[in-house]
Length: 534
Image (cartoon, rainbow, N blue to C red):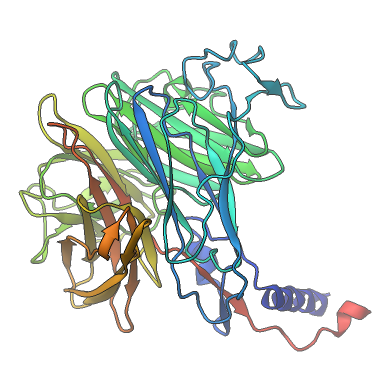
C-alpha cells in the first residue's frame, strides 16, 4: 500500500510537469513552500486568477483599472500569446439587505427581488452586474491597459490569465472619491483567491464603516466564516459571521459592525472558507480621515515587515495579533535611511494569544520615510503574529488615511501597476543588518506610449530606501513598476505609495509589493509508475 501511494504521488508530479499548469499562489503558502522538493524544474504558472471588489457606491467616484503582465517569463513558458481579462460579478445583498452596501434601492431586506435581480437555487437574492463585457483585456505582456468607470453600481470583477500573461499578471484598482465618508484616494491590488485571510486594523468604532468584500471566482459555491478579535479576545457575537454562502462568480459585502455588539477600534478580522475559495478585501470609510482598502496581511509568522511609511505621516497606529496558542514578545524597530532605531518608549511589545494589541506610534517617521520591522524579542519568542498599520497624512479637516499590512518578501519579482507621471514613491527595505539588498526596478512602457527604463538600487542591510522610481522615456498614460531582487541580494520588501492630492487634501494610497509567485517548482517524477497499470 505504501508503495502504491508513492507511485501515485509521482504520477501526479509527472502530470504537473507535463501540463505546466498551476494556479497563482495566494497569500501565505509558507508551509507549502517549505515542503517543496529540493529537486525539480521551476516553470511559469500557466493560469492565474484575480478578484477585484466593487470599488465604490459614491456618485462622485472615478475608478481606474490598470492591468499588466511583466515580460520575460521564466524558461519553459508557453509561447502562445494567451489571454488575461476580468468579467463583472453578481452581488448578494449584505447583512443589512443592501445590494453591495449601496442603500438597498434595488433590494428588499435581502428577500425581495431587486431591479433586474434574481435568486439562486437556495433563495439567495443576487443582483446581476449592470454589464457583462470583459474589463481590461490584456493585449500584450509588458504594456499596461486601462479602463475607467464613474458608475456607483460598478460591480466586482473576477477573471483569469492563461498562457504567457499568467506569470505576474496584476490588476490595480484606483478610486478617487471627491466627497463624503471615505473621500480621498482608495487603491487595491486585486487579490488572488485563497481559503483564509487575516485583516489586522479593522474597526467597528463610531464614525467608521468597514465592509469585508467576499468574492467567489469559481463555478461552485463557497461557504465562509468570519471571526473578529480584539484586545480581550473574540468580538464576534454567537452565530454571527458563520456559514456565509458566496454563490459562484458573485460577491458578498458584509458590514463588520453587524458581527458584534461591541464597538471596537484596533480589531482583527479572520476570514476562513470552509468550502471553496474566495478573494477578500476590507474597505474602510471614516467620516474624518477618509477611506482606503485594507488588503490581507501576510500569514502569521514569528516576525513581520511593514514597508512604506511616508515621511510626512502625522499619525501611525499599529495593530498586531497573535492568533496561535502562545503569547508573542516582539522587538519593534523602525528601518530608516540610515539604520534601525527603536521608537521611544517601545523597547518591546507583548501580544497575548488570540488577542490584538494596538500601539499609537504617532508621527514615528519624523520627516524621514521608513518601514516598521517586528522581530522576535530577546526571549526568543517564536509565536506567530501578523500586523497592519493605519497611516494618516494631513491635519484637521484635511486628513487622509491608508493602510500598510505585513507583507511577504520579494523572492523573484513583484509589480505595482497604475503609476502616474507624478505621485509615485517606491520604498525598498532590507530588514536584516549585514545583508544588503540589490534590486532592479523596471518602469514599463506607458499605456499610451513610452520606452521602458531600468534602474538598479542597493539598499544597505537594516535600512529603508524611499525613491522616486524611474519613468519610461516619453511617457504617455500610466505605467507599471516591476521590482526584481538580483543574485546574491539579501531579503527585501517593497511598497508603492501613489499620492494624488485633491485640493488641500493629501489623498494617497499604499500598496505592498509581495512576490508575484509567477513560477512553480514542479518536482522530478519518480521512476516507478508500474503500479498504475496493475
